[in-house]
Each structure stands twice: as C-alpha cells, then as structure tokens.
Length: 339
Image (cartoon, one colour):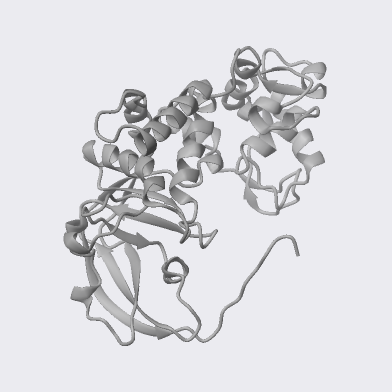
C-alpha cells in the first residue's frame, strides 16, 4: 500500500496518494490471465460486438476504476501501463477484443447448470411437490458461497421499519407480527414471522407503498449485538480484489456470479398485488436454508428504492426498537420509462 502523495497523471487529482503503475502489475496479472481472444463478450456481458480489455474491465467490475474521474481513453492508457509489468505483456493483447477464457471454453453458459437447477426446483415446489423435493438445488455449493458473502453489522447499527397507521404506534408494536397473523412474504412462509427492516427511513417508507395523505409510524431499531447476515445485494458491484479478499478464486466467482444475480433478483423483485403466494415458495425455501446455517438474516436490494436495501431478520432478539415517529405523506413523486 502506497503512502506517497503527489499528483495523478491520469485524472489530474492533486496532492493525493499515488502509486507507480508497474507496482500494480502483480495484483492485476490474475485478472489479465483470465482473458482470451473473442469476437464478442456475449457470455459475460451479453454484448454481441467486440469488447476491448479496458472496456470489459469497466463493465464487469464497475467499481474497479473511478469512472467519474477517469474517461475510457484514460482507463485504456492506465490498464496498458499496468500491463507493462506483466510477464506476458504484448501490444496485441491490449488492442484486440477479449472475453473470459473460461466462459469461451465452456460448452454451456455461465452457471447454467445452477440456474437450470433453480428453474427446475422452483417449478416443482410451486406445482408438483411441496415438502419432498426431487429436483433439489446444490445446497452444499450454496453454503460454501454464502459463507463468503456474510456481512457483519456491529452493535448499535441503525435499521428502520414502518407500519401504516392513523396515529403514532408505540415501540412495542413495531416488531414482527404474531405467528397467527403472519402472511407469506418474499422471505417468510405463512405463520413464520421474520422481522423486515430497511437501511433508512426513506427505504422503509417506499417499501410500505403508503398512499398520499396516509399516515405511518417509522420505528428506529438498533442492533443489540453483532448481526451476521448473508448479503445478496449488489452482486455485480463487487470488485475483483474484494472478491479475492472474501476467499473466492476469480474464475470461481465469474462462473457463479450469474446464479447469485438470479437469486438477488428473485429476492428483490417487487411483490405485486396479482402475485400468488406460490411465487414466494422458492425464495422462502432459500431463506429457510440460510437460517438453518445459523445466520441471523439475509439482505437484499430494495425493489422500491434503488439506493436502499432490506434485511429479513430471522433472530429478531438481536434488534431492539428504541423509538418511533409518526409521519403523514404530503406528496408523491413518480418516475416512469419510457418518458
């Protein structure tokens, strides 16, 4: 880790921590080794046309470079300079279209076997068998992956939960519902309540889908002890070095990433009024499996607030509602696509 301060030759930032590009070559060579020639990047990015190495790195690992400060041509120069310390460096490698070699050589698509398992399992649990499932998912592999996606929230971390109400509800009424009033949700089966909380007041307000002029009470929860939750939010935003720090081999993560994104989508997609309860069964099974591994909960991206996330907490004793505030909605703003 560099401690030298200076001016960046690429983004023109002044008096910042800088490092020689060659000194990054060892870290990046694991990335470079993954790539091979390919006329397109369909397997990894869904692109039908050619994709240069720097373009692929920007698209697949969106937080690898500071894109708001570095334009694509700067990133191209930066990647080339880093590559000059790589033993296999050649101008041709950095000037021809690339794709992950492991995906090009694979006879099937990335994580296709896992996704096929999920599709077959989902179809069976919804339509044919409920408790004795023949088309099981690979729980052993999932357990191994989930253990490396754990996030720990320290004591006193704040979370929020909202309930539509005409007046202020006391803190003792802000917890999970009693089992005999528990309807099925994206994470919990009927009759088995989980405590659903959000990262912010804004997120929990959106999640309630409160109407104009309706009132709601927002409870402020704090963690009473460390919460260890499996994180299935923003899978695509993990960086390569963060992934390796979590114990993944890069090739392994590249293969399993589409499957994790599928699970993320299943948990995060909005629940509509016309959805039937059977649609929840696969994700309920998934969350119950995570609970059986001893984790306190699972977190996933909010479908209603793109910047927020939610937690389904299995062990609600680790959270305490320390206050509640009543609000009334005075305005709603909608966005839509296409305009």
